[in-house]
Image (cartoon, rainbow, N blue to C red):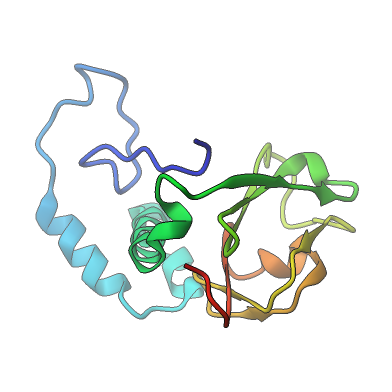
Length: 166
């Protein structure tokens, strides 16, 4: 099902290795543990300032897996998948989908040369309100500009607030 992470042990940071057997080497678990502890409670801007270390990838994995534990029905075998329509001049540069009825993922694609110029590109959020699980920002339902949704971190993981989500 789309939206299911495929993470190999040891690739929680940037990994520029080739395929097997090039990727067979000891994993520095102490480094990953130290970085995970350093990332805990930090703002997205701090996480992005350490992009060379791979901290954004590790932090994103941590946050997404924590959300999966928090909402097992949304992400479990019975959780549904529904693509959401991105509209505007740069719509081809983003993918968005909903898992269950309480999680929306927004991911840029084909970003070479895009920069942060999303122009009029927007996404229609289902009835909400919504909270970005990565940044803590609150969003209403309705049409929202991607430039705002992705201003603090390059991807968004929105969760519906209030009401029953499981």
